Length: 368
Image (cartoon, rainbow, N blue to C red; front, side, top):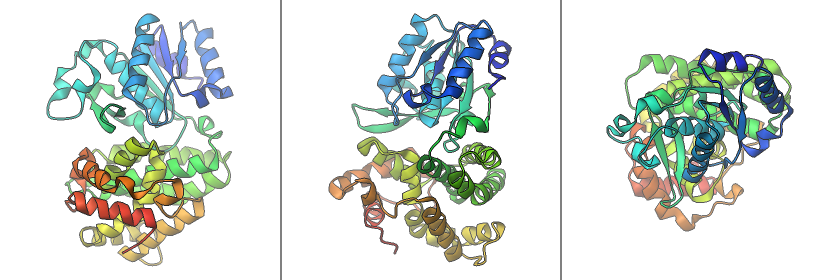
């Protein structure tokens, strides 16, 4: 993080608002980064009121802090939640419209007053969401109980610092969940129903990095090589999913909004059930991925077996019931998933009933 003050100076940031979450705010690495900025003459203040599934209220509070402190840029340090909130604060700092006017639908992004967007420096503390290389944020509308995507091209951070030492404090269970999130991005992008061969290539290599380095990062948190490679895999997954996502994320967004569950863990649990449901459309693609990964069984079945084995190795639960989710909202989950923006990329167009059945399978651990 020694590069942080220089990154701010390069972007003309003199008074940054450092956006993070309560857990990261207590880490020594964060406190050292904060002190290095102060020593460099930056008028830095910290905002850490960020939930695991960030809300519009978190953003509104952060914008008030940004304006009250006379800040001119954002440093976002943390997992995907902190990065998403930091990017959205930077967007909203100079806007007069409400947040939801910039939901990623149609040409809403053209409503943004671009000169009001503050510059952003991002430094992830998890290897999962890849939000540091994304032009959007996922924010929960608490009133509607739905996750919404806020988008503008200039939400892309101008400087990104990938420092594996920032990730060593992440416990094994969160290393596993966030790492599987990185895999879900590459995997869903690879299977998405669009034509983007460059994204496919990035996605395949992102999957290979997860295959090679996630178990080591979970087993030995201080393995800086594994941590760095997983940071690369995370950024690659988020780059690849410009092609599209799919049913995993459509369901994970819906369940995260309803149950406030960890997004990466939801994707990790849902993964094999979605692959099985998509089998008819993706079996040839998964066979090619199995060959690229060097699996002994270079078939669709071999790939799904690898996913199941990786989940077991890193400690991912088998079904959604294992993390306290019930079937009480099954119909609503199906309807929400079918209308989620990520559903458009799925290789098979599932309706609400199909998503409800898929959710039930993932709840009980039933592979068809």
